[in-house]
Structures are given as C-alpha cells and as structure tokens.
Length: 246
Image (tube, rainbow, N blue to C red; front, side, top):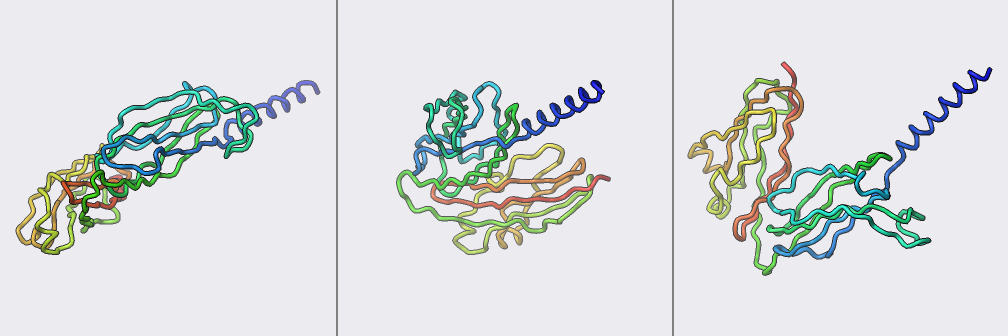
C-alpha cells in the first residue's frame, strides 16, 4: 500500500513539474525612442519575467542590411516592491535584453519573430514593425518588385529558374541597379546562382534571374527585404518553395 502511495505521489510531482515548466513566459517589448530616424540609435528591449539574466536567451533572425547592431546588454531589471506592471503582480527582479540598433535605411522594416528561452519555458514573440524616418526628410521613391516563375513545390536535386521583376515603368527601369545589388544571401542546403538576363527580359523589368538546386528536402525561404540606394528604396517580398526529398 505504501509503495502504491509513493508511486502516485511521484507521478503527481512529475506532472506538477512538467506543468510548471510549460507555463507561459511573460515578455514585454519596448522601443525607445518611439520616433526612429536614420543614422540615430534606438533600443529594442525585451523585459522577461525571469530573475536570472544568465539563464535567459533569445533566438532571433539575422538583422537585415537596413539595421546595424551597435550593442547588446543582458542585465537585471529591478521592479519596485508592490508595484503593478502590465503583467500584474510580478517578481522583484526580471531580465532585460537590450539591443541598441542603428538604422541606415528609412521606411518600413519587419524584425522578427523572436523566441525567448528560460528554464521555465519558451515564449514566442511576434515580429516587430519599425517605421523609420529619413534623417534629412528627403523624398524617397519606392520601387516594388515581385518574384515570378516560382513553383509551389519541387524535388531535391531538381533545377528551377525564376526571376525578380520590377514594374516596367520607364522611370523605374532607368533606376534599376545591377543584378548583384539584388542578390540575396544564399541559405544553407541549396545551390543558388545568378543567371544571365537577356535584353528582352531586362526590357520587361527583370532585375535578377536565379537558378536554384536544393540539395535536400524542406523549405527554401528568402525573407522580405528592403534595399536602398540614395533616395531609391526597393521592396522585395519573401519567397517560399516547398522541397520534397528524392
């Protein structure tokens, strides 16, 4: 009988520990200052409701070329005793993950999503949208681009060619940059190379022609990007292709 009670008690403790470990992790996001200007630093801070900074980590996608990381600080965040926060009554010590960033391109930048990890669990944080103003207030001309010839699904080892095209307005075509300007970072597990653009394709607004050979199954993904040259901003949408194993 005692052995049975001990066994049930052990099961209860293990279940309680599991539930406690899976509890939601509370995280708030702060941006300072609210108005972000090119060339001037701002801070993106995650306040994590966990008291030991050394046990807190954050998983985030790489910064785009529009942002430069100037400093990262992981420090305790002291909350006054008895103070109510957006979380309700919280612990006296939390963790602050502070990124000091410098933007070099004006416009809309999507940063994230993020994952904050502690021994108490993981919290998934939605992407942060930054609206960055130009330092001198000069007029910015936006060029929207789109991917064409994208298959929904291919097989590993299969070759596919697709293009990035800009609207064929005469002013847009005159503002086009060399293909190397639009070349993305090559993800792991694929062969991705530029192909030569014909004169006819260039007249139709093609600015980049890529050939893809995936080496394994999964997903080929290129994130949304914003590139800028002088007062011209080029907005490139994300790209996804599902890849089957051979």
